[in-house]
Length: 243
Ligand SMILES: Nc1ncnc2c1ncn2[C@@H]1O[C@H](COP(=O)(O)OP(=O)(O)O)[C@@H](O)[C@H]1O
Ligand SMILES: O=c1ccn([C@@H]2O[C@H](COP(=O)(O)OP(=O)(O)O)[C@@H](O)[C@H]2O)c(=O)[nH]1
Image (tube, rainbow, N blue to C red; front, side):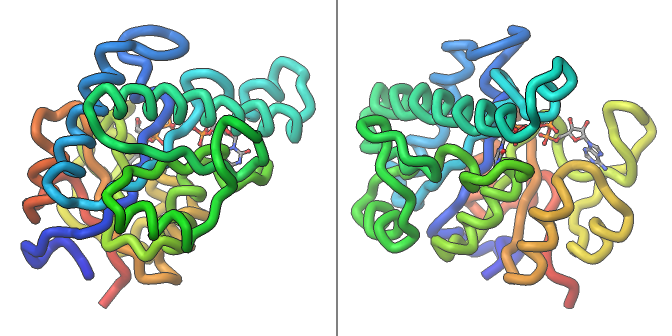
């Protein structure tokens, strides 16, 4: 199912970057941003949309950044994945404060913090009306949480992958560097991959392309954006398999 037909998606995988939780800080979370993001997610869940989340870790640690300061890449990536677990716990707490049930499933075994990932169990929780947060990325170094989001969206048979980011869609070049860049309303994975459009990593886009998973890239901080997308409105950029 795609969302450009005006249909409401029933099950969404929302990818939030770690930096999205940082607000104006240089590190960690902004409690207000966390709560307002949780509020928007909870609102959709209360209206019957099944919401699964993947949260990045870039507000705390990234393996590539740690490698620059001399830390072994695999250890750095493991630290990055643990950072995503901290973000998941913070978001779970924020969602509980919004009065919704939420589970954390982790791709690394961390007893007492979250349960191990199972696509089948995750779908059961979603069907029961719980929000599920997938933490620790794919569980493997050398991947990103964008790839984890694509993978989990496919595994739980989401109708739509949403990538919430700092820009309001995919442009013909990086809009942060090029103020005259033009935004696409819709683009195929083939074109986005061929043009190396940098908003999402290639592995993630190839996975979506091969598994027919539509994706919308949008700015989470635009008020009402998530609700509009759920209502089938064309917000941000829709990426689909070429027809
Ligand atoms: N063609 C493009 N269209 C939109 N954003 C792009 C493009 N190329 C690069 N970007 C950058 O990608 C970033 C979003 O990616 P994201 O994964 O959320 O951030 P990060 O890589 O910092 O975690 C934007 O801040 C934007 O600067
Ligand atoms: O499957 C994964 C997902 C993430 N990471 C590590 O976790 C960090 C944080 O994730 P990401 O950079 O995707 O976070 P975001 O940019 O979305 O905040 C990455 O830099 C990697 O070091 C990893 O090794 N494997």
